[in-house]
Image (cartoon, rainbow, N blue to C red; front, side, top):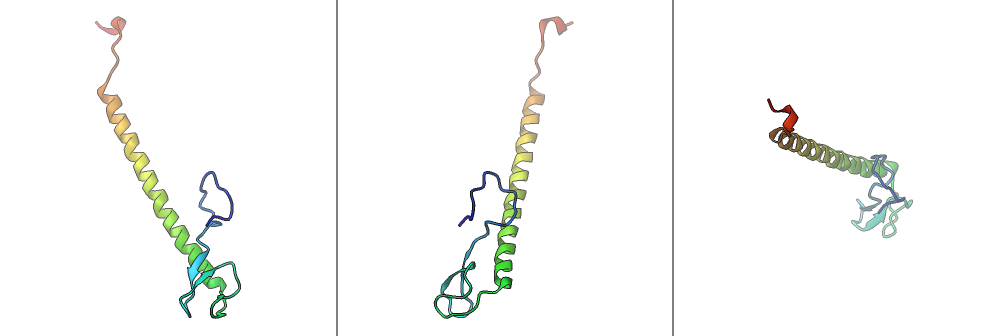
Length: 93
């Protein structure tokens, strides 16, 4: 669930996954709430920080994969461009 509409991910961490499970009862919780709606277990800042850290780690892996794909595409384009050379009649000797 995103808290705002992004057009480009700057990996700021504001849109980390807000849904989680309660450690005490296993029920679904919203990390923005103060406590679990099922058992009343308090939702701590440590739980929120852990969810944000997991989200940021996932985003970093995704970003690294995108960078690797872009580098591979660039290398492929450069290889293809190196194979084809334009020869103009006035350059032929």
